[in-house]
Amino acid sequence: MTFTRPPWTAPALDHDFVHATGQVTDDLDPATGAVVAQVRQATAADVDTAVRRARTAFARSGWRNDGALRARVLSRYAQQLREHTDDLAELLTREQGKTLGEARSEIAGSASMVDYYAGLARAVYGRAIALGDTAHGVILREPAGVVAVITPWNWPLTLLERSLAPALAAGNACVVKPASLTPAITVAGLALLAADPELPGGILTCVTGPGHEIGDALVGHRDVDMVAFTGESVTGAQVMRMAAGQAKKVALELGGKSPNIVFADANLDKALDGALNAIFTTSGQICTAGSRLLVEAAIYDEFTESLVKRAGQLRLGDPLDPDTTLGPLVSASQARTVTEYISLGRAEGTLLAGGGEPQGGILSTGHFVAPAVIADLPPDSRVVREEVFGPVLTVHRFADDAEAIRLAEDTEFGLAAGIWTRDLDRAWRVGRAVRSGTVWINTYHHFYPEAEVGGFRGSGPGRQQGVDGLLEFTETKHLNFDSSATLW
Image (cartoon, rainbow, N blue to C red; front, top):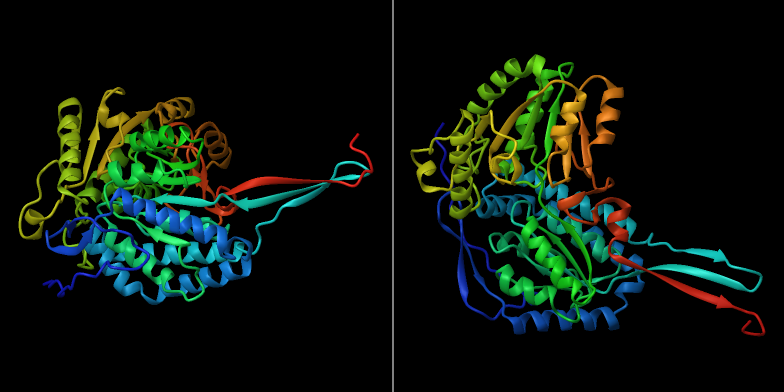
């Protein structure tokens, strides 16, 4: 079919809630190189202004003590996200490079997340305890204060709302720093919230710019009480070190190198679909990517052959084209890094699929990398151990449950895992043994606002989503009452 990209007008990013007075930079489409938006960068002074506005709003507005107000604002925000799905999805695709269908799914999921926390905004409960004949305790959950929300570029709206919505529902004021590669979609999404007439001014502020400058200034600001960061592990460790200097609370979701385990008794057609989804969602640029495929020896050859065939049928192309199944990587730098991993995999193992540079039309213009499947790698290979963040899958053979668990656990990360088997006893046994925050059984990449996610080990402390995701943005306070006539 012939596909023509529609005309595009770059969105304006000037809003009262965005504090940025620095230089202007171009935000580029990773598929075409066209300008998506012009973004003014923040300065350290802008960070200070944004945080001070948030601090004042938190202290003086009634936001933190009015759950009904928070519920109304968040509920309307979810509806606004749904009503602007078409525009937001196109902007997301043009800026980040994911397919239009995936972008629409991201908007829908973001709205659902906000809806869920709108419902919880009126349910930030404490408890009361009788501590004796004359002593009583009231245990309160209070908002942390001013929360810095630092977002990544791969799922810029979903991972924004996953922190922003519970933080606001709990009564906090938030300062958002979007990823430098996806500021336009983040600001566009925030603008729908900022326009709400009942949202107190300063409860939502935003600063744009590079993490090593603006992010560091935000994390280190004395009036920021908590940092919610989603991103790669090296940066996350730096955020934790900086926050520790002022004993700030942190919630981090960091990298992953997730195992996806296929047993011989699995529904193999479903497992094949699951293996492709696990690694090639967002062209592999997702922290929960099932990038290590572990296949039982009895079906290894058959399963791997079918997988390679299906991977070869994925269609690289313009992410706005509905026939495209794999879009570009987010930047030239990311494409270069992924290509280097593929070259290393070819040198150390067997390249079963991919590896060539896509050519022709938009494939020559954008940051496209053909999906790669690599076998026979040594366990200490960087391709096996490090988070590639691209469409690169390594495949490994195992003999029994014990070896599957050993291979799955041979990682510094612990974010997610997949298990494919019809034996529910095995699923329970292996699922308990794998130390990951989310373990999918006979499925992959299904997320729910009600169900917590988060990491073990190097994938970061803290939990997002669910009730724990709300409580993450609160502090516990004990009010102790004593009606005795004497102190002792």
